[in-house]
Image 1 (tube, rainbow, N blue to C red):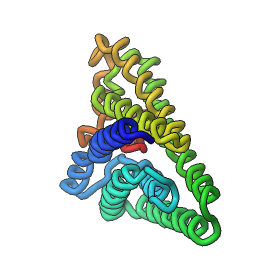
Image 2: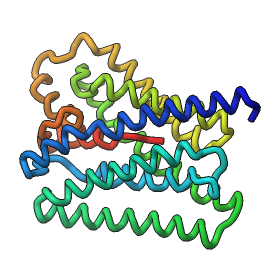
Image 3: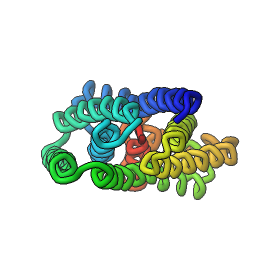
Length: 257
């Protein structure tokens, strides 16, 4: 990269760090409520455990001995992994016994899977083969995380209400995905720009849906349901069935890189 390209690469990486940090911190109010009530109520811990796996894989991929010029990917995902661990531990402490067992098992699987990827790439693979192995693992889980809001988008279209899709969460998902997409293009790294390009595209679709249906916000019977759907951002308990699915999709939307 020339000097100008290198500067732009760093700028978009820093901006991506800022927007991703906002997404990682979005559920703080939710977990503060869990601590205050000493109950996880109807919240699901699965999105946070899976986001942890995505962060761990992305942080590993960004390390210099795996891929070059991606240290900013490691910094934000390392931070995100720490935040997600806190969320998961809080959830485990206050979850009912059955849910606690399920999340503990998933948490153990995530740590084991990451350890396996890290050890295989470190001990058995070298050079470009190591990058390809870690890159594919990271891209797959990143795309899965980015695809989580699709159920919310489907509900927005069906109900014609944007109460199911908080504007600022959609905006920062778009900004985060776009920042890392450009970062990956400038660094000529397909394992960064492909998955984040997908995330940027989904973020743009969410914003388009918001502007199409924004005048319907809060109308009709959707108003009561929407309170539960936005629970991940506002710290309110969600409801079972469809509302729980939507809230969990919003929860999984946090911090993709």
